[in-house]
Length: 221
Image (cartoon, rainbow, N blue to C red):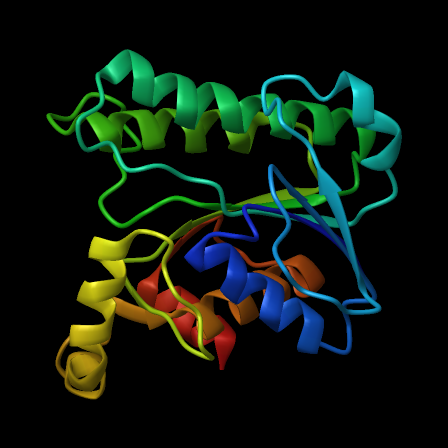
């Protein structure tokens, strides 16, 4: 399987990339980003692209792939709804619409989040925008599309968040992860399990398009 990863320099994207590099069923990986992910592997090709609202100049490099793992995302903290909508809904749909046109047999996996609002009418701005994004992705003419809604994600295998505050939190939380996993199994997962679950649904599909933490952990095992 040949896959495209968006956001391979972020914490979640790093995890997905590592699992793809290690997985025997993944034969080729195209990492699309504004900067290098810093990995050197025979499977991996990097495509540096600055304008994530326009792919016309690189469309010829985006064909022939069977799956896309879309791991780009921003925090809504301090943003207006208009700003967050542009960087979440418009940015994601711009890439997805291009890929659906170029690769109609592709499976598209989107990292959303726990608490996403499919009704698009709730009180939380970020949840409404994420819900709108999910709903539109599910309407695109892909072979299949899956919305991943993880809660707490523990980074493994040396992965670090680029945001210092977040990394400090993950470092402090690491010793607590075994207890969290036992007490709240439906609310915690890892970068490893998220990557494995994405590969699993890309290879074999799934009956449900909306995947919560419990689903993610089950697919990874």
